[in-house]
Image (cartoon, rainbow, N blue to C red; front, side, top):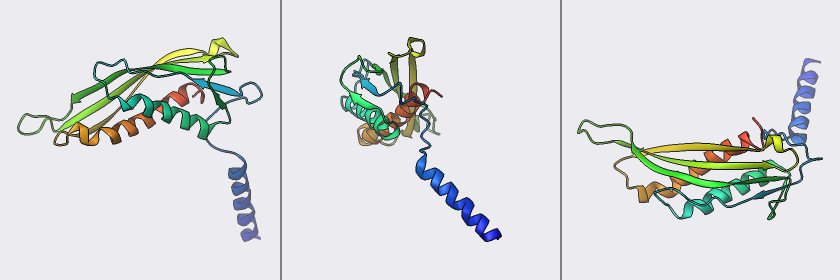
Length: 167
């Protein structure tokens, strides 16, 4: 009997997991059906040209994977996200025995305007930053693609949770 109970519990948990996705989105799909994403141009003093496209693709992919919202081109959608990349900075972090930095931090900052066309009180403007450290013995050009990819993922997570996920 105990074995049957354990199997039944496991089966119910599997069924629940199959029917419900634990993605954190708190969207009422009877109200919200569409979202549009504006551009996120780079307005930082230091510019890495592929960053804009990389970040915009990361945001689009996250929305497509974690919601049932249809991404459309019109800002007259139910929800709209736009903004700009305002910071792309390098700062020394750890100092070695020779008084030179042994770690460098790449920080990317994004300003986001979230518009809820169904409920204006939920609209907001927010700023997010994320970073990754790398060894100062490495050239930025050698690690830049990977760092920007990781940081863009972190930023997309933060933005999604603060807006669409409403955490």
